Length: 425
Ligand code: S3P
Image 1 (cartoon, helix red, strand yellow):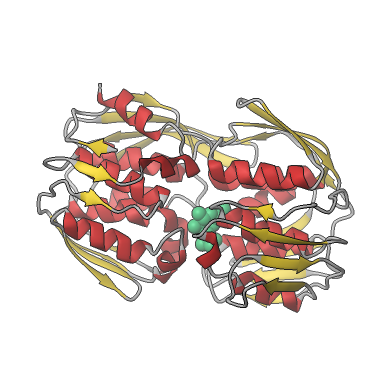
Image 2 (cartoon, helix red, strand yellow):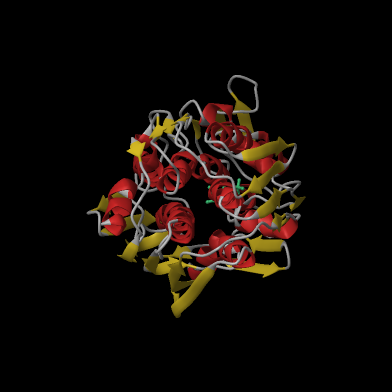
C-alpha cells in the first residue's frame, strides 16, 4: 500500500462501530436469555473471531452486516466446543472469553495467531486461578494456547497491577458465576464498557472510583444494543484532519465514553480545533459528532491516569507529535510493549526511518516535533494501528510512504483506505 501527500480532507464520515463494545455485545448477548439485536456492529476480523467462537459453543448468531442477532441461551447455555476456539488476532476475545470459560462445566482450548501467542496471559490466569479456575498455558510460557478446565468459582477482591479493561472484564465475567462478591480494583480506571453493558443486561454491578463489584447473576436479559462509532478508529481521521492543511471533517456519531476520550483531551491540549456536536446517550454509551479542522499543534506531556483512556491511540499521537512544534513526552505507557506488537519499538523505528527526532524510553517515547517527514518503507508487523498511523503520516509527508501490509487494517477497520480516499477527493 503506497501513500502520498494528500489534498485537504473534507467532508463527512461515519467510522465503523466500536470494537470493544462489539465484542462485548456478542459475549453478553450469548449469555443473556433471548434475542439481542445489535446495530452498528464492527465487521472487523477481531469481532468476527468473537462471533465464530460463540457459534462454536452452540450460540446461533445471525449476521447480515447491518444487524447482528444473537440468540442467547442464558448463563448456562453454552456447549462444549469440539475444536480449539480460534481467537485470531484478538486479545479481547482471548482474555474476556477466558473469564467466561473458567466457569463453564466443560474444558476447552483457546488459541490465536502468532501475535496472540506472544501476548501475556498470566494477567488473567492469576486472578482467575485465585477464583478457583484451572487454566494452563499449554507451552508453559504464560501465553496462548490456553487449556481451560471450567468449574465452580469463588468471588475474590482483586487488586490488579495493571489498568486493563481486559483483565477487569475477565474477572467480572467470571464473577457472574462465582460464589459471593467479586471486585476488581485497578491503578487507574480503564474502559468501562463491560460494566455498562452488564448493568443494562440486569447484572448486579456497582462501580466506585477504580473499583467495580459484581454479585453472581441468576439470569442476564437480552436487550437491544446500538454501537456508536469507534473513537479509536475516528482518531486516524482526527489526526489526518489536523495535520493535512486545509482539512475539515465531520465524524458522525462517535463514542465519547470518558474512559475512552483521552485522544480528544490530548489533541485539544496540543492546540487542536475540535468541536463536539449532537451529543447524546445511545443505550448505555455517550456519542457525538466530532468536527475537526487542520490546526497548528504544539507538544505536550502525556502520562498517569489519562493513559488507559487513550492506550490504543498512542501510535497516532506519536505521529501527531512529529507534526507539532516542540517536545512531546509520552510516559507511563509500558503497556504499549505488549499490544498487537511492541508499539514503542515499532513506532520509533519507523518514525526514525521517516526522518523524525524520536527516542524510545522504558515507558514511552520522547518526540521533538516540527521536522518535515519523508516517505519510507514501513514495517507494520501486521499491527492494524501501526498501519493506519503511518497511512496518516504519509498524507502529510514528502515522497511515498510504503506499508508492507496494508491488509491488516481489516482487524479493526475494513474499508479504512477507501474512507481516506473519499475525504481526499
Ligand atoms: C480493550 C482493552 C485495551 C485495549 C484493547 C481493547 C478491551 O486493552 O488496548 O484494544 O476491549 O477491553 P487492555 O485492557 O489490556 O489495556
